[in-house]
Image 1: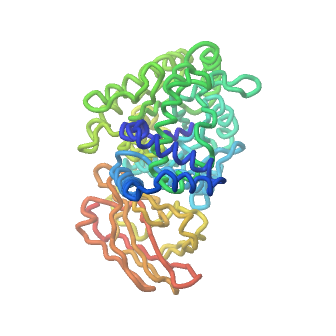
Image 2 (image 1 turned 30 degrees about the vertical axis):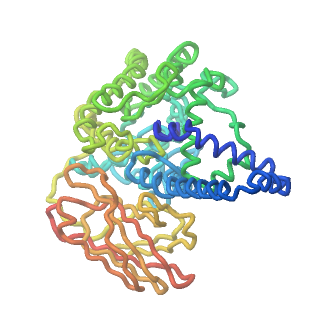
Length: 563
């Protein structure tokens, strides 16, 4: 299920509840209501300040100061807090919508065939290698919020297996956003006979037990608030136009209050809902679904198991109006949140004869040990973007590692032969994913060609806050040079996404190589930058002199063998 929830924002709540902000909202609404009688309004103002120019002057000065303060708050302070990872606002929310749009453009998975596949990452029923692993899931395998498909956890499993010497096994995945276990079972019955995997992994999330009646109506309704009618559409549009970031913060806080006060009238808050589906009629029906999964799995000639996918993200409930506290108890709160939701399901799967691989305790240990210093309890460190709670690079990589551990320990036959050879620098870099996907990308062992989009408004921009294209590599690689050539290329800047060779997941902000001008540009990457680091993707922000946006790109891997 796609969950797009901004974090609890105490500072925004204070702003919303302040008398000044409430007054601004009331004045905005009232001003529109009397705008059709502008002459009458002008007469009232004249009478009010007749013979009192000083009062009028003070009022205008006060309004000017308030306007400057609001502009500063909206255009400077809130974006700065967003860039620091302390809040989420318009920048990341708009980015998330673009990421979802571009993932749906390049991932051709649909209800008839939910296998992840694209133009640059083709998947066919015929195996290209001797072994194949199929991962069944939902948005966690579809890629909700991901700019780089190689960050998705099943791709991390592929890369981890290759690091361990298993080069003759292919990992594929199937799933769509919001898919419960029942849907996954229906797909698996079609996919397994056609794609012939040698092993099936069923990823488990806390929303998977969602069941529906014969009319496809959920047995337990999650919260869906009706339209907020407190302010007119016109007032909202004016506020969003004048102060988009501030308005977004206030609306987020107001919606949170509305959720807390809804009392279940419009469905359950998420932290209540994912427990309610483990009760009553819904859970009884889910037990039957689990048994059907077990019966299907036992009928196959290949092994399968269920694997939990916890993350350092929790949700508010009616018994706890705030998200579980951060700080010293953060990870224990996370452990408790998932454990109470895993326990009933674990018993059902085990009783059905399915192997239930729960990685919760190991995840808590790993996440707490690898938490970024200074923001250990910030959930932004573990999710894919500040506005999307799907697993980020750290969590997705950990899932891949734990799956590889379990496969090696219990299902080694499904991995194929293991071969160890001295690591050599690749002669070329393979691009298997780009955003946006409609850039007419072509590549061979020497060059890559793409057409840079003409509309900057459609491009990604976060976190560097300027439009760019994103080019993702099949495997992280140490680079030596990046060259761009275009007949009408005017200037360009390049940013690298780095991952250390010991952690194997992206971390830290993109590294800027610097802006260059001209139609033939080259960036030499200092060897010190590639010291124990590799590049997983590059961002290119470019400008052109004319309508011809074709670019020839050469990427030279580092000749070092120390990576």
